[in-house]
Length: 487
Image (spheres, rainbow, N blue to C red):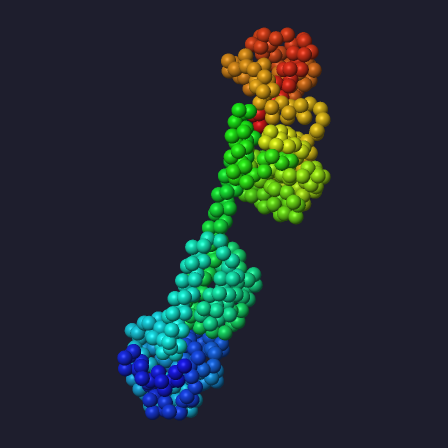
């Protein structure tokens, strides 16, 4: 490593002037260890010993004559060997006295000199040989670029490797004291630095921003790829749930290609929201999804989300049905609910089913249960689907395309009616109220005569005997399926 005296030979060629040449012989002939650009006066407290400190013109011009003396005194106290003042080119007797007093060499250069080029030149002289700053920085930046090309590397190992290339102890970690924040979408995901408040070397000042940007970019790309894959899986599950029987195998194969275990045991969760603003509703669903993924992280199950119309769903899957119990799933869902402050969500759980068709059936059950939660105004716990009774039968019918088609054919004569939906709703209410016009009217907020008129017109279009018990049962089941499909 050269000394200040060795650098004196560079002055003529690089526009650097010794402002106190007569005192140069009194400056210690120690080797220069580091070159530092002073960004503010507070940096003086962290400047390493045996450094050459460059004071930019913008900073130096704010110093009066007495301030210059203080500046040189302070760098002398830090063990600095030389100060280079940008914007001063004329030798000054006063600086000669200051140099002699504090044993610090004072150099100058024109304000027009590019400090970046000057630092590179001086570092070449200080470091010398193939291990100079330029080559070290080049090696480090090439390594960062290669890491980016790999697509999925360890940022901790990269930081350590880049640090070794520039002769620094760089590390990537979670502590803010580590150094510079790595930001992704405005949030710090980690920090890179030396873990010290010492002034950074020129190599670190050049390489660190590139390193931070690489880690940030890689993390952002990884998030985007994961999000894209989640969206593909969500679309595949949604298609599997709403498709007809002939397409189940097709969408099941598509789901398998996306690494969704459709052949395992499944329990579905449906979340219903009454929030009309789609942005707020989507944000609520995302918070719920994050809470659920955290709750199920310790369980050896797969979780995949899906969107059906304006609702949110999740399929919890395991290869071993013993690992997938309703009580454990309910416990995980309850943990997620308790971690949220979202009183507008209604949660429903289906029962365990197996295979691609099982996903459909369990989700139909879960959606029915979430609607029950909405009717009960229950936002603090998940409502489990009743595995017995007509609700189970309806879910099985909805999941079975053949049975669902039969139910649809029963009501097909109503397709020509202008108020088909209202007719089905009225018929269903009348059947559920055991033929009571008064009870059905109260339920629908209609006059009994209006209900009677609709029932008569519906019966006429259907051409069925509504007094027959089997016909009434078939119609009630068909109405319930049709209304459930409208949810």
